[in-house]
Image (cartoon, rainbow, N blue to C red; front, side, top):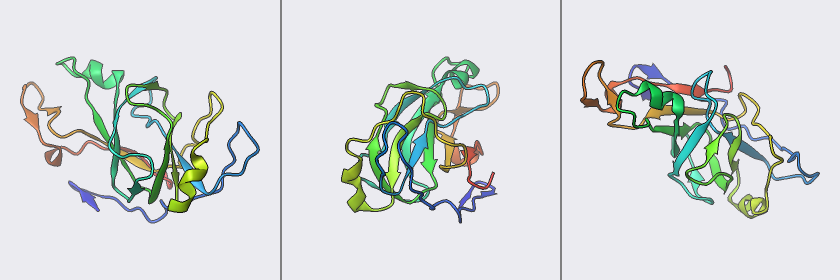
Length: 176
């Protein structure tokens, strides 16, 4: 897939692994934890603005699943309004459980959702929970972030440019 001038290669992104929740000895079906994206090295906290998908929905590579914002993007925006980023996942499967409600402030790398590879495994995650402080391992979930369309401002002007004309990319790839 190509976004602007950048080609995205995602051949290793749909490998699920069996994980055991640190808060119990229960073995869960194969799954991945989606982290709050780390949108900058200095990011302390992000806000999950809204979910675009619901628990149980099928997810395909390049689907936008949620919108997030962070204070770092707000302070860099001269209007003072937060920039909202669309979070695109590079995973296939099903959204098994949403762990974080819209409006929640979350530290980077904290789990915000559980993805599984089989529709039949979704009910197994109904009582899934994590211990406080659990983090998603770097490189274990692949995503990209784009400034939501219509929010990018040209330097020194108040007009907006659509996303297609602005290559703003943040992401996490398994091969980084």
